[in-house]
Image 1 (cartoon, rainbow, N blue to C red):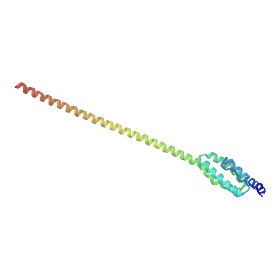
Image 2: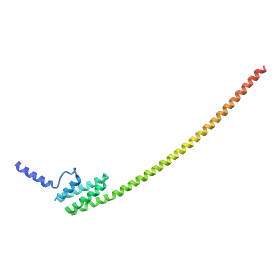
Image 3: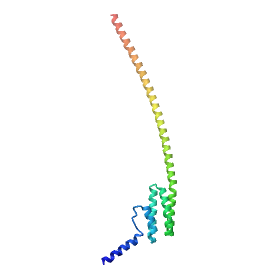
Image 4: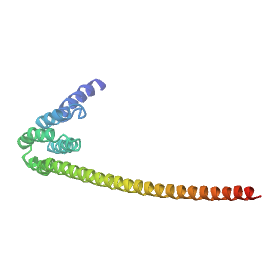
Length: 175
């Protein structure tokens, strides 16, 4: 009995193998080949969904040109094998077509933001520089004023000491 079931199982694997395979390696060509070789419309629909997911993965990775190329390759195969499913790629194609302009817009926005940030930083740096120069001048003026005050105080004290010393000398000479 086992000898009879084994060849039947192998035959079943070969028959069903035409609609299946390893989807992780060479996913792009494998899905195309699976769709070309498959006769079951439910399996083709599943492979079309896998292909759409693969295109979305390429777009998410920033590989928009590869996604467009893959769509151009897979869509005729789907149209030939399952014309009812050919429209399934329209929504994906519209998303892929919008990605470059969206990416370009995003790049422009980033450039504008960077430019504005640079301008803001330059303005802030100039303001800080001006404020520092003002503070320097204020401190310099204050130090100059204090130096003048100290100088005048020292001169006044020197005159007082001199006058006091003169008075003492005069007092000593009068005796």
